[in-house]
Picture 1: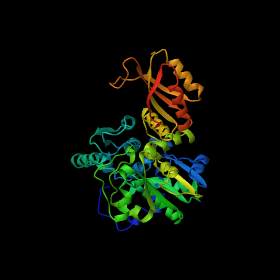
Picture 2 (picture 1 turned 90 degrees about the vertical axis):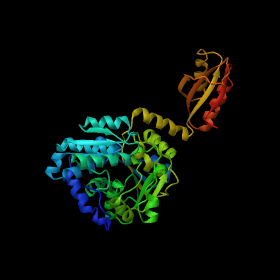
Picture 3 (picture 1 turned 135 degrees about the horizontal axis):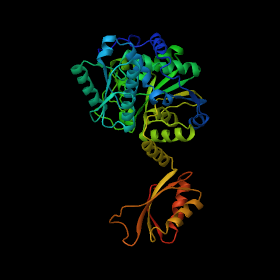
Picture 4 (picture 1 turned 180 degrees about the vertical axis):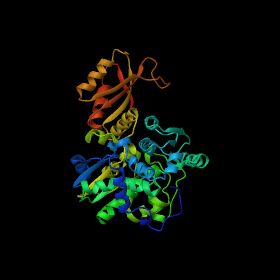
Length: 418
């Protein structure tokens, strides 16, 4: 499973038969995840119907177990005995680690420094040795290859591998059974393994199905690659979606994406955080930023899905609870339903009851209140206080802020609604 030269065609990488064999191989290992029909998201996007393919409910919290297990199960026995190494921002790590435990293969995982602590802990929990090396995935990838060479491990690529791609394609095999008349399918792209497998199955099922890849603006390498007809590598990435913060596709995924993916769109980090928020609020599902990117495209102007039957693959849900709370708060702020304000109060903490009553009387919520660090700009005879406010929209919250400004002994220094 080493990186090689560019194949001549997508069929040289993966076929529907390869996906079917992978599906047989992972039966009883990977879950068949549900397709959740969302009337809310259909109304918000103008689509005729929307189905959320919930891979965040998969074992290890993402689709990655599918490809990792399929690839590792097909290794020769001698290779299994030597062990495997992988590089991952987190989800592939957990997939390889669990597959190793189930197959009795020793696993070493190299992760970049930005990997969430929850993903590292979960990977170690599956019995893998975890090595933190590199500021971004590409650096971790290079180090993992060095370990493979020096220690004799087999490198399990997170996306540019035929068996991995075939395993990820089982998401598409389930999707066509659950949603056979789908018109458009939205799938995140990091290195391109998931969308390569999914597109292979969908295009065989119905060549007219539109397959659209979704990337964050800060890691949008796929569209330039397709426009140029060759792999385009970004010098660096900058996005909240760490799970798809790759700098490029590689030969195998590029070959499949070029032939079988209809379009690639980019979404902003702000749109991604809104999608994370709405998935939690309206679909009652926890999605990581990479998993929410297709929903961000669905709800933005990135892709027109008017009157179409649409599926969005929510590819993972591995996120620290603290981080998820921050993402949701940021999303609410983008929606105009959350605001932060800095107050000066004459009576600390005696005025807090007055502030809380003023917020409650206007039908809003007081999410947070704390004494703020004093700055040179603060009045020396007033206490600076930071508050978080929840409301139904920006006009509602402006009314709340105006009410706070009218209280005796309270002044509003600044707020985030401007």
